[in-house]
Image (tube, rainbow, N blue to C red; front, side, top):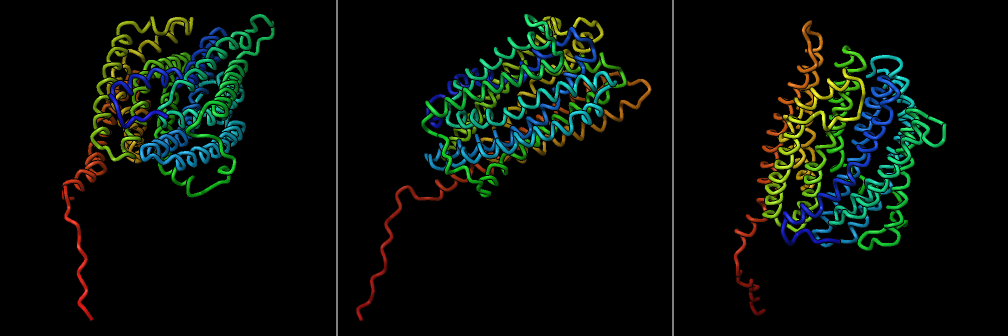
Length: 468
């Protein structure tokens, strides 16, 4: 366990962020690897895998419910020096991860094809996306266990083990993808099914390694089977914090689905370019997201310890670092989009759409960095409802106007991306305002109590009884 209530906040952020970003991009890199190797199978395969991968955002919403709830409650417990509560929260989160994983598998089997019919432009794309989803669902289901174990470590200030495990999972996925997709060395090409299978195998190996780490090396929190009996009170604690944060990712899923829907009128090449562009943009935003995620446990431990000044300082430092990182990547996306997109498709129309998307939507990266930071700070404070409100605002101001614009005779895909810039900026401004208001409500109380309490109170002498 690492005490984040002491020492340099910048040092804590910079030491935690690199391992977080490596571990966090596992699924993202797996999807990019899948896109790269299926690019030789045609536009329909690319569009199908890209659209199917978007369903991962919806499953990621459920993952965030557990991850955010686990990090917030465990960080508060660590800050209070309450090890028993930290272990109870962890073990109840493990039980929930099993239930959520089973739910994901069942939903994937039942809803993969209807989902693809709703977002795909043609039947070939529907078929490719459905096959990929069915083989990719085990990876998403297993990620719940990975999420809980990694979140428990992050709440205690430990991030390196989960980084190493998930980095190795990425290596395994990269090694398996060409073998299973194109049949390298075996002569048995599985196509898009091989892409999903490679990811599922890689994630399974990662779960086994993290499980082994907890059994042999982790000391602060551990698996306690006697705490695996469902405790609804603990589930309510976790879900009260996690559900609004999960709702935020569900909103992202809606925004992405609307993007695929309105672009369907331009054909599979436009959807494929949009899919590649969004995956790549998500990847280059990961360093700023890692900085924000590092700030969450720092804020959580200090909030649990009653140190409001360090909570505020964490927000300021994390915002500045995330903004600097986002500016660097925004410049790269503006002036060298082709370098970032190299190798993802040989279709000129697909790459033209991806390049245009990257140049335009990267303009909102600084605003997105502030959204990441504010979201993580709300998680650290244990109140994630404002995150859901700001995300809902973005959905309403983006989705409905996008669908309306798509009905115009002169509609162009750039119109949707200009709207995205405006709505992201609005969400960032609203997030900062709500967070500052939350600081005034949640962090002012301890200071007021100190002022109200005398520094050296005189002892209270009980009145003497009169003699009988």
